[in-house]
Amino acid sequence: MRSVVISVRLSLLVAAVLLAAQWSFVQTKAAGGANPALSAQAQKDFADLAQRAAEARDKDKLDEALSLYAEALRLKQDWAEGWWYLGTILYDRDRYPEARDALQSLVALQPQNASGWALLGLCQYQTREYDRSLVNLQKARILGLSSSKELATVTRYHAAILMTRFEQFEVAFEILREFTREQNEDQKIIEAFGINALRLPFLPMEVPPDKREAVLMAGRAANDWSARRTDDARKGFEGLVARYPKMPNVHYMFGAFLLTDNPDKALDEFRKELEVSPSHAPAMLQIAFEYIKRGEYPAARPFAEKAVNLQPNLFPARNAFGRVLLETGDVAGAIRELEAGVKLAEDSPEMHFVLARAYAKAGRKEEAARERETFTKLDKLMRTQREGAQSVGGVGAKPDDKKPDQMK
Image 1: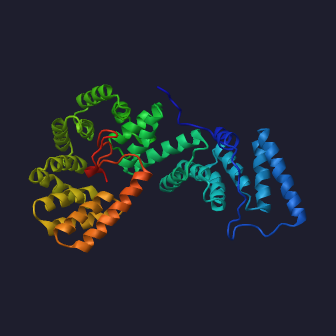
Image 2: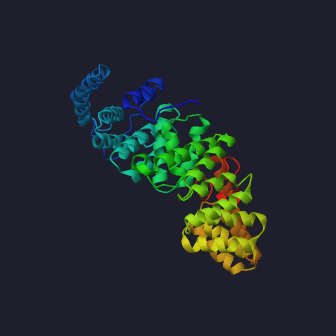
Image 3: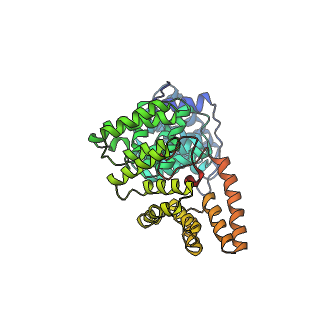
């Protein structure tokens, strides 16, 4: 098993991104931000400062380099390369607010610069601007960080732990699975898996000491599950349940693991979760969806209905309850629930598909056709944008074998 440490200083990142990838900076003027055309003397002064700054940087005279880059940027504010080096050196010196400001200037000049967005997000993580950090880290991932594996790894890790902190457990788990595919089993990744699996809205540094052991046990089991080491995962989950039978989300996670191969046992575990956490909507939904899969709609109804009452803004709850109502003859009620679900998740193919069925059953042909068309477009887009699907509950189905009824 290969381990890649989730900690990289900017000196390494600079080498990876700039030297190995031979990144070419584009000199782009920011609207309203660039200086007027430089005089011949100013151009000469700028060229001299830029050269001296590069030489100082190459000789590891970073204080001198910082001063020279700042002076050069006062002459030429649209110098993207200068903002990059200023930002990375400041980051390497743990001067995160100043580094953040420099990198903001860089991405204003180069909005397609994935590395710039990534480093800006990492700065904002250090300054505890977590919401902005997550937005910018995800923007970097969308733009693509293929030029630097080290930077891509660090960006992915921080995006995952921030997603978990903001209770976006499903998305965070999918991001963490990317490490499994790379066979990266660094201890920090195991810890991140565990925090996510136990649905703890914490960053690693915020986990209470009394939960550390459970987090690591859960993380090892979840990582084994993601890596398809089924026997090891089962032993891990069984050990976790035996040691922490009253801890929230332990039975839920074990049930999620069992769902594909042993659904009856999974239902037992979800019910045990409800004994520990009576308001656990994801457990209710897993039960409801399993009964829907079996065509046992009356059995599904109380769990789906209670999940909606507990979390009316959770679109899978609207999906489940709407489908139950549709199949038990309450078409008007189904349309009401499914329309609410579509408003909550306009990009969900599954929501539009089920709503189309409800409209068709009500004889609303034009609306049904519209929803089917929307489903087709969204389904095609989703298949091209991501691998697999997400469960209603974070670690919600066996990797690569999830149920689309529950995920979209």
